[in-house]
Amino acid sequence: MYKQEGYDLMGAAFEVYNQLGYGMAEEVYQQSMEIELQIREISFRSKEQLSVFYKRRRLETHYTPDLFVFRAIVVELKAVTEQVSDHEAQLFNYMRIARQPVGYLLNFGHKGELQWKRFVLSDLHAKGQEEE
Image (cartoon, rainbow, N blue to C red; front, side, top):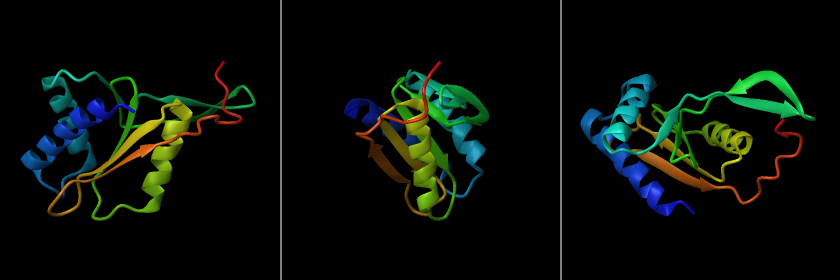
């Protein structure tokens, strides 16, 4: 599911990591990814707020994933020494709220290599999160 799109996304991410290395602020990687995606003519939306619903009622709380790529892939960027399970949980929440089955967690903060994981959610019947 979205394999070629994932390869294209990861090509951009590896280029950003190769150019900048590790240890910078997350916002530096965010802006650099946006530039790299533009250069590669990859469609994306940045920091788009997602509404959260409970029993068809919109909550005041919003979720804001870092990127939506190809209108199909949720991308969460990190710049930490090591990823933790909370980062994965955050991405899963974004994927469920956005109702997108594919997500990538990219960590630019690890020394020596870009850390990344691809996730596919087969169960997206997000109970209690109905669109208006």
